[in-house]
Image (cartoon, rainbow, N blue to C red; front, side):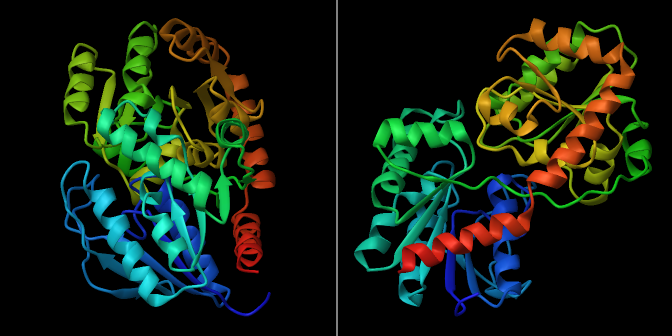
Amino acid sequence: MGRPLKIAMIGQKHYGSREGGVEVVVTELARRMAALGHEVTCYDRSGSDVMTGGAADTRERVVDGVRVVPVRTIDKKGLAALSSSFFATLAAIRQRPDVIHYHAEGPCVPLPLARMAGIRTVATIHGLDWQRAKWGKLASAYIKLGEKAAAKKADGLIVLSRAAERYFKDAYGRDSMLIPNGMDRKFPSSADLIASAWGLSEGGYLLFLGRLVPEKRPELLIEAFKGLDTDKKLVIAGGGSDTSDFESHLHELASDDPRIVFTGFVNGEPLEELYSNCFAYVLPSDVEGMPMSLLEAMAYGRCCVTSDIPECADVLAGNGVTFEKGSAESLRTALRALLVDIGRAGQLGAAARAHVEKTYTWDSVVGRTLDLYEGVRR
């Protein structure tokens, strides 16, 4: 390793949070880079936690060897990411790091300011966020502006999937580096807390876990599940994200089926137990970047069922089941086949775990990212 680098990271909401994949990735990169001797600063939003609703820690502090600096945030829908990334960029420029690493498209809008200040920049595109159904025209246009800034101005561009790699080449003529997310090895837990909280047992439920937003299509899963003749439950775990009306709609859809359980946002031991004991994990998304929840379910050795979009199918690599995107009937058929062939579900889960442990390691992600930092710094 060369001399220690001074690194700034912008784009996550709150360091250490599990609100979304961006937060998990930034936390893992930052703490592991700090452990290697690099000086890492993460700029946090100062608004409330989107998933839990609790107030964020507004103190500057050091966590895991990482300097965490909250920045001014306009805590209103559509303005939080815009304001926090702008003020974070100004704060980072004052600190003069070797590289500023932006995460996600929206936070990349002020990236050109760092370039004008002579600071090297890297952008990780976690997904084509302007495609997400929750955003209106104005918000989508703003996010697309961030995408263009990353494609045209960033010194280094990281994508998480081959589909995104092709997109940036076709749309902007821009080469990118494919560095998929990593995942720690997971060790299953028994169904203790989830049994007392929601009456769940080992192998007794299908699991959807993620933000309750339209592009993840939880309503499609509810529709497919309601047509299945099974005594297994369907667990919908997660909270809304600027989409409270959509979350209410999901509850209405499920109100006539007592087998469907909503847990709300889950973290810690209950989350570990949910992954560990589900019969299958289901992700019916229309739009994804590289879903951390899918990697996590695979790492727990769970059989996974996803839509056939490349961002999911490439992660599964044949070690799971895919169905036709947007088709409740195709999803129902896939689930029905697994429910009558329990042995196959177990085999796919074991294969998924082996694939993740071999392919998706954080050591590789961190090493390749640091190599990119060194490359753009020269």
